[in-house]
Image (cartoon, rainbow, N blue to C red; front, side):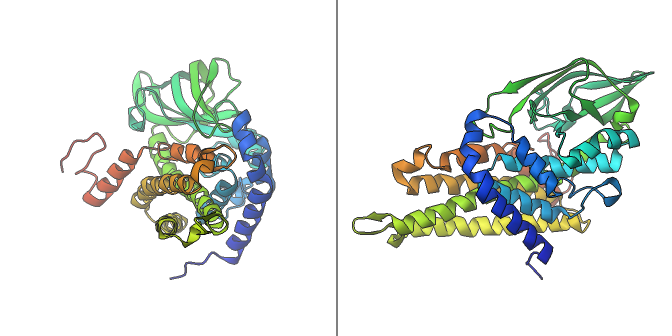
Length: 389
């Protein structure tokens, strides 16, 4: 077994880490305070051809694989965890447009997405459903000129910055529900309105509520066949759940490195903090657990790159990675003493941001239910809590 990155992946990692340390980290606090979306980071990722890592060459992409996407997410999060959220839309939006976009959708939007001139995100969650994506109520009623979308999406990532959304709604044709379907919706379409949510973290990325009031979407902006949307978004989540875990691990590992250096330099009762087992042991424990989780994440992405099932692995990474990272960053704050609680250090900022990854793309409870279902069989454990064969 070879656990090393390829030479190309190592070069990518070095380049992104250098960028994150030199340009992202110094402005991390400012972006959080202002809440301004990091358009400059998105354009930089496009210049580095990172926005096309999940898009085929035939459609203008630079298909480097999902391990590469994970590398970028982890390294960006070391400098600015919020900006690493851009790596969530890179694979799932790129995949959907690449595989299911019509020629018009690709010409109008995929080109701009790859160039970093347009931001596109997903609209899946509804206030009545939360993590239960299959329970969505939003409808897209077929008409002679396209589809009419009516409903509301909540918790939409990058709400105030996006130029378009891939919206998942139930396609209704002649009064018949054809199932969840994906639609590309420009944000300047008549009938679309959006409102921000005041979150405790990831403030430069932002979430919000988007309402659709009889919004006309042309047939050319439907992605895939009617009824295929739920399957496609679940396949996408098998990637983004791992990315979220790697983002949290990147921020936690950086926090541990900073705390190790602080413990070497800081003296207490005449000796360095690092000489105390009370300092050594928690750092050793967190580093060990995070490194194990990190390797599991890259294993899951390797499975995806090789076309193998990885739903169980993705869900496991999703709950364990953020949980371990929150605990590690919290202990790093404690080990810094009262100074760790101040806004002079990035620890409290990272902690706020990483807590959000525990909820994104499904809560820990949902992730554990997915793991149990994969272990016991889909007919035995259901996400609604019922049990049966």
